[in-house]
Length: 380
Image (cartoon, rainbow, N blue to C red; front, side):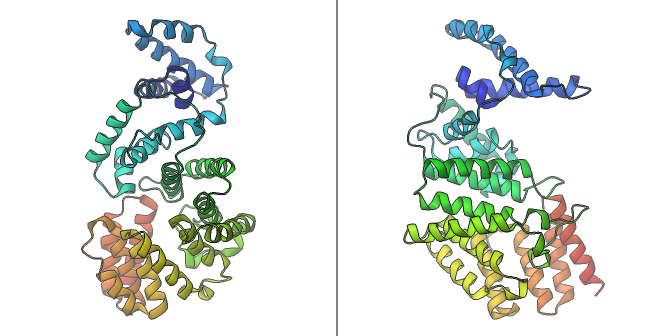
């Protein structure tokens, strides 16, 4: 709906306000979902926007044209509108630091706090970047450019997928709508740029993660760790497609890019018949390459897990403690610390670490999982 309004009116901030007002009116007035909810919402949003535009004399001609449109007839938006909105948010006139939060807000519907958590920054910084980005896009033409800004689009799709795969907050572990839409748009991006290795790597990474969707939670929504998942529930077709894309991505560009390397790591997990048969030395080698080329605290913590799996829990703990001063890792650090302390046989210290992680975890499902582990270790 936002994409449709921007295509017609071209004012990002006002269109976003109109969408929010339409959603609010629906929330207050719908007793049942109408037969054509998109058309209903688009009609209301267009009327709200027309009222706003009427106050601006310089927009009189556009107002008159829009007012005469039969918005109800456009009950289904063109898929190109969604991709065009994504590309608009990644417009070259915006710095990457502005592109990403704007897209996560406009496209993914994330809150300022969720975006800040995803980007390892503060909500105030995110809010400032979004406001400035909207101001800069006021006069930018809406549509599909002949040469899309691949790097920016890939990064925001990656973050949108991550939010869908593992929500940063809320009651549900996953947001399947975001993950599915990110995959769809990644496929569109690959269609547009079939020889781009990192686009193939990004799509592979998404598919290989999404292949485990059905096995990641129990019927009651509880989290199932990777090593405990029923691998027969993994989607073999997605895994096969993902591995084929990984093979292209790691050979088409030398050295491989970050998405290709991450996808290669997930492919190693996907190819293991059981958790015990996982090729951890290969995963550690891939993390070494990824961390050397693209330093990141979360990558460093994931590498610490691989170190512990290859060289034992004491080595894993040492690698974790080397990262202890980085506040960006938040509850993740204590979660991994608890895992290795339990592996080392120190149940009491592991329970304390899991309890600290649970207290700091912003996501309800993950919080319950960590608290359950802490309680289990206390009773061991």
